[in-house]
Length: 373
Image 1 (spheres, one colour):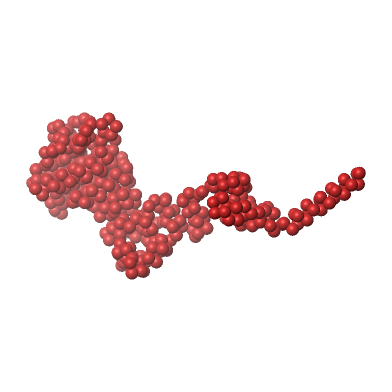
Image 2 (cartoon, rainbow, N blue to C red):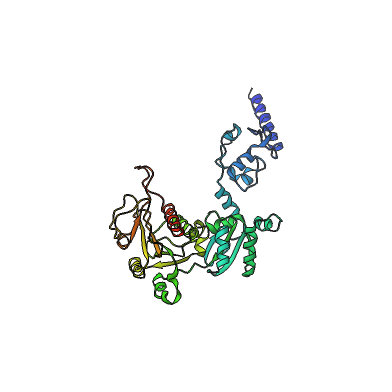
């Protein structure tokens, strides 16, 4: 009896060893849960993990299958949910395999209109232009965008050869912002002192301008850019910003302004109240803005809601738009000749004010319209 048991054990072990020997190159196959076609079970695990390792067979997993550790193969076989990598993770994976990203000398201006206007105005020192490879191919075709053609033509005029860049590198340069396939490495924009502008105004004829805007401590770059865009659209000649508690004039501001930052005459002010007093002495009308519930003091009397009493058409105006939370500084409010508010159609405790860039657009439209009547 013992011999019979021993023989059975030997025969069983022999059969198992033969199975293992002949199956060392076998691929374990399951049916795809949706397409119902054969697929390698471990390859399914490989795709779910996004591993860069080769997956061929079960018996070589010690050499090939390190990337499938921790994957629930039973869940895959039964049609369980596969893990999916995000777009930024996929770009990161490509970035690791691609060449080292370009080195930035200044700051990265991105987006079609900001890059176009930066090339047109020439206010920045230009270092390099990075363009997605597919965009360079498209510009050579007959139906290419005129905007791309103009950008590359201006770059050629300035001796700036476009560098072919991968999507991953452009995402890296812009920190995953919407770059539209183009980035410009350039110096920061110079921002002159507004007080020096007034000192030189007698000889330069600067005071022949009719409409200026002062942004008092605007901190959100998207708001700052949107105010610049509205200012340019409604014919504002110069924009001033407070030197403290204002956002940096970054490429994000340029993108939010659709490139208006590149073309507007922009100045900074250390003492804006003193600047306004000098303007008033030269005959300028100072127009303030305030929320419906904002308190004074306002030298120009109580706020006026729509329909507004607009400044005299023969006087140049400077419009003050205040901080997103605190509004116009009291020191500036005390200098105003008039203060305008945009009243809601119906009172609401949920949303009590407009975005500063929206309110600025409304007021600038009325000021510009008042001059054409």
